[in-house]
Length: 83
Image (cartoon, rainbow, N blue to C red; front, side, top):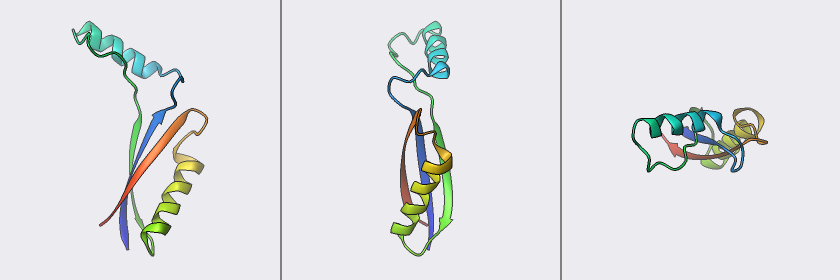
């Protein structure tokens, strides 16, 4: 079966996000003063083949834990859909 996984990776709460802070400052300078915090993350799309959705979940979970996310500084979540 073919699957598509969408992985969302974000900085952990309390971790300094200099890119998010710079973007927040820029938005304030452009007049968007109501925006209180900005966090910049990553979205990764994976196309994979697995026997079933449970195995696809295991594959994506392993990829996130071993390579895609820095578990010390980032959190991740993902959705999988059959294609």
